[in-house]
Image (cartoon, rainbow, N blue to C red; front, top):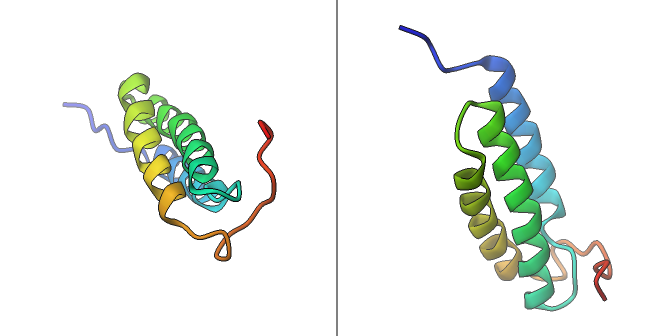
Length: 87
């Protein structure tokens, strides 16, 4: 029986989630923040899923949803990284 837990993959996933969480607040409006959070979350979720042997598409969907909600509910005064690239 193979053990699927890898400390290296866990640390990589934790570092990616920390980076995504800190970048989820790009933009001034809730829509901008939801879009940037969703994009960052999708990329992070796919990377974590690939690093841990999961399905990258499922990871992207889950991460994108969590990132979009996280970006939409944060206030611009809490984290403001400026104008998003698409504006």
